[in-house]
Length: 364
Ligand code: NDP
Image (cartoon, rainbow, N blue to C red; front, side, top):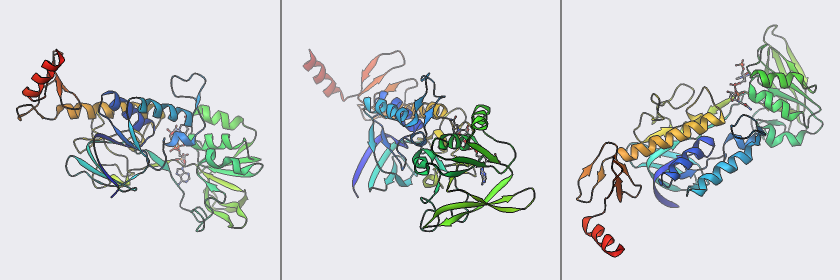
């Protein structure tokens, strides 16, 4: 085992939800520990321009925005671990979180902000090489891989905002981008649809399922086999790259069996709070939100989760100087448990009487 750590707030994930939770928890002097996950900074780090994050009138690049989040979290003392969680035990507090790097982390509260990852079609030719052509022309990230397709004809699969964004971005490099969608209507927002429809390098194939990605390790991708779901006809369509953009799946497998989830794997939270079925465990961002899934809503729920965690910690019975455990409604216990702010604002020392007297004598 590498290291054993014990923290009041442990945050799993470093996208907008996790880092906003970190900013709030750090400013509340809870010294949060963020475990990055396999995609540090989350999905925004593999996107280009973000035009709808409030506060950036001219837009901002996704990676730059996440850099700002991280700097802000660090400024207030957030600690980071570059690894990912591979096992948890949430049977009692402190919860235990194990990482791929061999850390064992005890968490008084846990905030799950593990986000979501791109979904795949599950068709022949799609798997990573050598099983399939993944990395040899098949990708789920235009920003990461678009550069490699200069002057080549590409296919983008999907009809949502991600597909429109990927297709539009890829026209910077590709000779032509063909969007293949399984219906005759897009799911994407009006503005993103308009942008794609107006782009002379993008065209559409409707009512088509991609059944196979064809090619060899030597040639890379050479085409897709399309199935027209109205006529039943199968055709081959030539292209040199395929970008799968059919949505995302929450990264919550490691919490299965502990946290209540819906059938897709989104963590259920209670009422207006970010509380899960386990007291002291909170969930936010794309791991919990199947509906809005925006950077700004993720950040909002991250803030809520941190406030929930802070209030949860404050509401726990605190061992007072005399040894007894008390909970006082409306009181605010400092993170080190050494002082208690009463509901009327009076700050009372929670250090043993002898120590408090020494401190006050020393201070005069
Ligand atoms: P969505 O779930 O919105 O869209 C997924 C698309 O993929 C749909 O068109 C769906 O088809 C299609 N699809 C799903 N499964 C399959 C399959 N097995 N075979 C073929 N096609 C399939 O996901 P997105 O990732 O596009 O968007 C998620 C959220 O993120 C949305 O709220 C979106 O607005 C937001 N977003 C915002 C962006 C921005 O504002 N810049 C950029 C990207 C995303 P069907 O329509 O038939 O269901």
